[in-house]
Length: 361
Image (cartoon, rainbow, N blue to C red; front, side, top):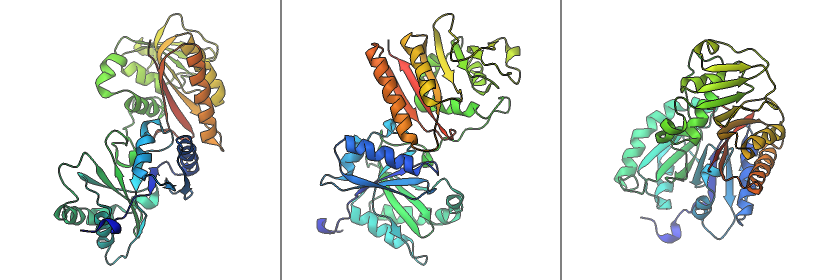
């Protein structure tokens, strides 16, 4: 066993993301870390599918990870405390990994091998499969992999066959999905693939044991910008009655269900006849304009919960999202409207983020 002086200390936080959004993760994390009063620097490789934050502080990276709540992050798919990346020899990949784990003093209950969400990452499946069982066996013999270790999980993030970065995740402050990705099957009856964005939002923002109450049959909903009907389809599938607001045509058999009233009106000016359970909105427009419209609904309490997308600019995406969320939060607070508000860049999102707001009274 290594002495305390020989210990390898984690000094990084590692975040997975959609390729192309590395700068957005890095910017978001750097700003949040600065607000928490920590020092360090964000690093990333364009199209790499991840970003790191190197901690330059006397306090341990573990403490920063506890303060930087995963559920509050927008662009990160996963959040880990990490060690320095390892460059491996193809003749013996296991020995450096074992040595770093033992030098760290880490113990954990499971091991996950993961790759960036890229074509190069997918090509590493065979290598990972060959290493999985031998590595688990070796770490179990050394006492690092054991049954009772507080739910901690060791992640091996394979950047390619010669580079891997080891990270640790903790229950309650991580994604429980491999790679932080929720893969859903496209329902063939749905009018468009956008239907998966709303389904993923429900999985992300609403605990599964609350679906029977918060996504209940007989509820009333409005879908602004509904055509061709991907989000309306999800609402109807849950047994909800829907006001589908869009000047464009609805596809499929939605109207024939008797659950949909299609109104060819402008979603920005339409008002509901009474308070609804749900507002959903996937209108393509400027983020600030969509936010202001949803803000008006919430202040007037026209719905109990809302899910809406914000289409992102090509540059300074985090800055635009942060600005919209801050303005929305301040407006609701000033109006005396208590809410839960979360925002995520979901797997089925592309150049957009999904926001969920729930009124608490």
